[in-house]
Image (cartoon, rainbow, N blue to C red; front, side, top):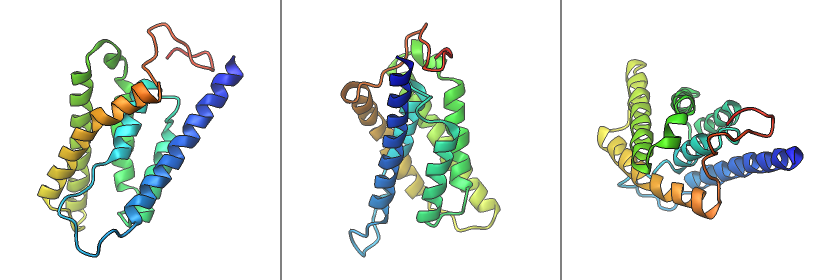
Length: 179
């Protein structure tokens, strides 16, 4: 039984890394030569947030760092800045994930949105302090709004289609640790 859960966890990790590669590839494809009016939502943040709350063993610290550092490299962002913001955000969510077991969806949605907003503002502040060009505040607002609106959709897909649910209160992981 432990072997089956171990293989399933590694398959979930591999699927997450492949999904992140697909999202990075999508972001690199030039669909038009004209600048876009609205930024796209951060679907990867939504997926990692939902998985961090539901099954944190699928998204360990090193996979999040690997994914977001790869994004920083491929999307030509300052190396490690957005990675650090996302690592702090996901670790805050991981530390407080027990609060999500007893609370409703709206609490989780608000909390994830607040964490994403704080990560965006921290990223913008650190870019401004280092005299690096910062994105316009309106673009950050649209990214925040679209990401916030995509969170329930991602949550529905992961919970009801992929069947990755919150662990029960007395559940144990494949290594015998309490979930």
